[in-house]
Image (tube, rainbow, N blue to C red; front, side, top):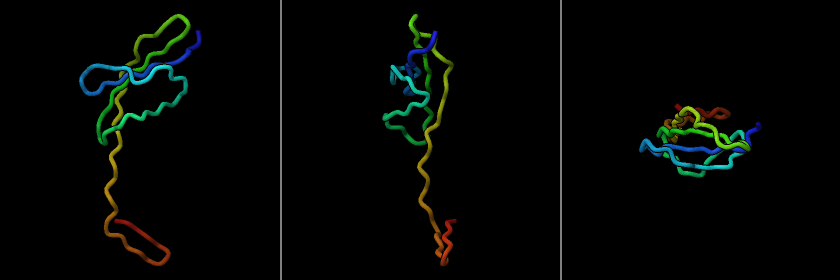
Length: 84
């Protein structure tokens, strides 16, 4: 039976998974939930078909990227710009 949609759950660091979004039907999902740089977020997913929901997937953990530091020691050479 084909999958109708997915439900995404995540752990806010308390060891308890809560629903982030349901009815997800695309291969890629983005969230508008503010993420803290260099923080690990943990997710599980379940699928739904006409019979019901699957068991939860295994846990996947993702670290949010850090904002890079500002460039320093810039050198401007005509036609060439470098940062160290």
